[in-house]
Amino acid sequence: MEAVRALLTRWEKLGGWIGHGAGQVTTSAFLMLGQAGAPGRGIWPLTLYPGTGRGGTEVVFQHLAAREPFTDRALRAEFLRRLNELEGVDLPEGKLELRPSFRLSVLEKDRNRELFAETLAWFRDCWENREAA
Image 1 (spheres, rainbow, N blue to C red):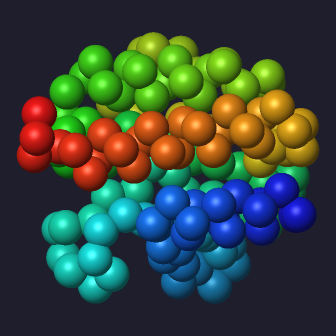
Image 2: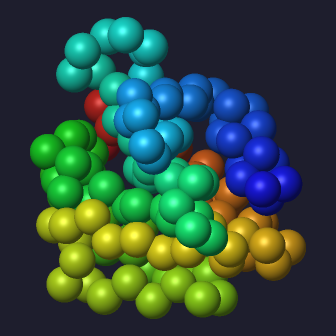
């Protein structure tokens, strides 16, 4: 749980915000970028489900495929490659149009938390620089 709190804090320091699902049984946290409440203007790389057993992280490649700059499959593949650097994560390239997941418990390792934070900063930079490309 502490690793999840640290992740959410770090995301906010990167300029993101946390959107929360409205589920009555399972809650979720969306790592959002963009203006809160502006339809179609935001983007999110992941949805966290901290209450599901040991917790899960859903990577939303399916949604990213419809949002610039991640309509570029090569950028989604790079995002996948970076996530697969985390010990305990092994997402296949065949999932680049789907919503694969991995356990939140991988964030218990210090090195994984650092790599994950770097990956999220890379994601933010890609999105912020989308119009310059």
